[in-house]
Length: 166
Image (cartoon, rainbow, N blue to C red; front, side, top):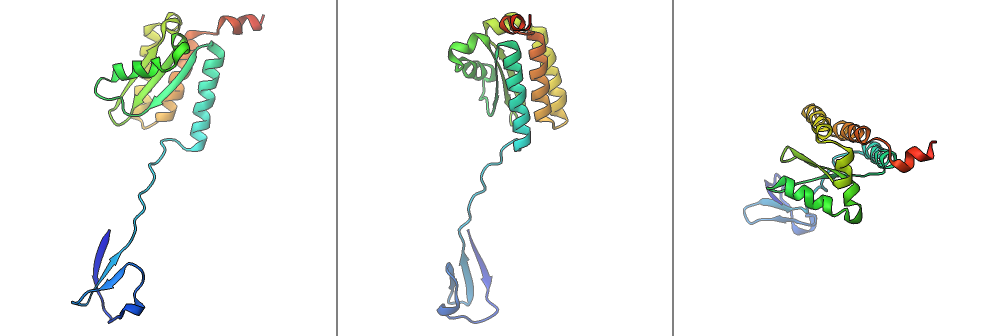
């Protein structure tokens, strides 16, 4: 970035700082390095801790694999979300992915075969409606945590978890 200022004083080369030059017309030319700002993370550390706790509790209580993706989902948001869900590999059948693209104002909820058996479409629709309501209020973190809780409640506890308590 370069800026030009008309010098109100005369200067010779010894008085100029690095990146400054006095032109023949008496204009002071200044060049400075501008460091680009790092992209801001969408959540602060406290919010990330709450989200991590909600993900952990949802996965632990249900035996399902819950995940959240936050980022652009491209033109075919469903296809991209399904590809991200498939990245769960061997856990994809038990996987539940909430993929949110804030810039596109879109999201997808993808469930694997086992997760779909335990979380009916109606429960996914209710979680989606809850997220929309929170997102409209600018509450991204609350919307995600609320949806995780609703989906986990719909799934119920895992067989192993319920046997451990009896």
